[in-house]
Image (tube, rainbow, N blue to C red; front, side, top):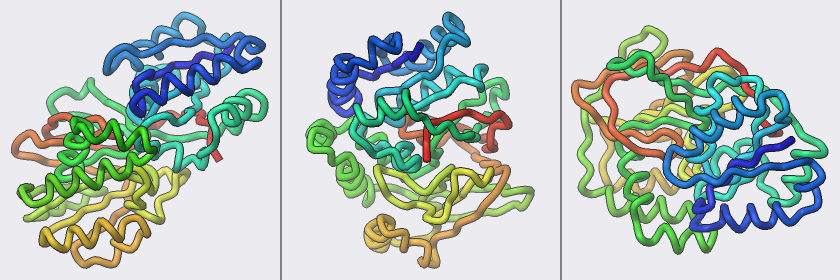
Length: 308
């Protein structure tokens, strides 16, 4: 059997439209597919745990119909079920994980491929360990960011224009509009990092992002050379940069040319410690909140993801 975990409000209703399209396909009945629809933020995590416990090895794959946030919830719900095959049919606003997996296809075509000719490949998710509660170790498929990108992500998610941008398949534009809204009021801060044992201090940090692959914010190539299979994490830091130069920098990110700026620092690492003297805004796979000091590593368990 195949289990679909669907976020019906992803992409301002695109999740539901994709689900209805898939449900009408003959394969849906032939392959004994069952669907579960999320009803609130965090529900995807609970549903993934429940179906994995309920059906176990009967499940050939869990198919996520939604965006990066829904995928994040499902992967965290399957934390203790690393052998479970997971595929995503992108229906969100950013869809950066699908982009990194090179699966930008029509939903029905992708659905048929997952069932008839899947490409299950191993993938190690990122993991954060909070200093205040070491038992909490959230996983991330894409990236985690501190600072400007987190504030922008929150602004975009709460905006009225996101609905219209998603309807036009312009999720990236939502991020850019939010960027302009936040830019000139945002205040840089000091941040201390320890990257593979090497302490680093940045006095006027604009943002710090740790990623598993190149894409960010709906298609920006934040670390162009990042490879999903490297087993490493990629750290991007922007420090001591003027607001006007930020504008120019972000336009070059789409082409991966921002790496030539002297204010941009990129590292590859196995462990990154983020030391904060106060809680800061952060985003993890596009979902936002506040966080204190924490450590980022790769999860030691391999997951099976449909990707190329």
